[in-house]
Length: 343
Image (cartoon, rainbow, N blue to C red; front, side, top):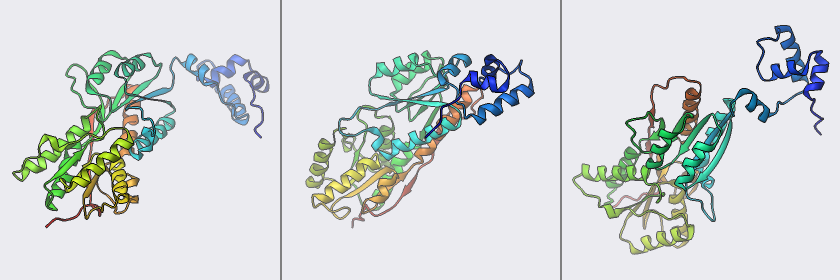
């Protein structure tokens, strides 16, 4: 059982100094405190395992030590965004980097564009991370808030204001996976984007698919893309409908989460993967390596996205110049067992 924590008054009595002097040591106002007194007070603070009040620290230091994180995503009834290992990997990396940098994380998820702008202006914070926010909202935020801000996977142009973004070679990812499918004999493939309300990254990946077709003198039509709904029951119906029609030989998913979901469900319905239909994913998360057959997918380092975003933001908070303001992390293809070669 933990003992009662000492108060500032008790620490001051032990040190033989005033409570004001103890507070000055706690909150870094040590210009008028001698080195000997400072060391004496600090030793007693550590001996007593005293933890200063966070609210008081914020008021005294005139900053919040809070980094806000807003994820733009549709709220889901039967599942949360954190169930996708891609999202949790980004958040886990950000929380660790934020904590190690001496800050606290405040997280909010929303799909309300007006709410994103309102929260960005209303929160008292030292910095802000915006994840998957639509370009039109990014432009408004970029020109209207004063705190340092870094975006993750946001797609917009702003000639008047510098903006900082950690992104991915999305188009190259779509190109690489499609090039591989074409080499395996697949021509009738369907791209399945996973974010109907924010098509930024998915749009780039589908453009990469088209690039691979064009490289071989072929055309991938616009209707070779079918956005997936957030409702799981509706997604399962779509998977089964597509597989039973046998119009497509390969399904190109824009996330391992949905690709693994489809692979498992179709097998439960007696449809073989890859013998009856081939499936590819995007992310290379833990699901891609747990399903059978293991998933051919595009690898990205989602944890590094979160880490780099916080490192960049902390530099901006401290007024340190950031050399590369828009970073694109590399991708590569992980070939496994979920694609069948056609004759």
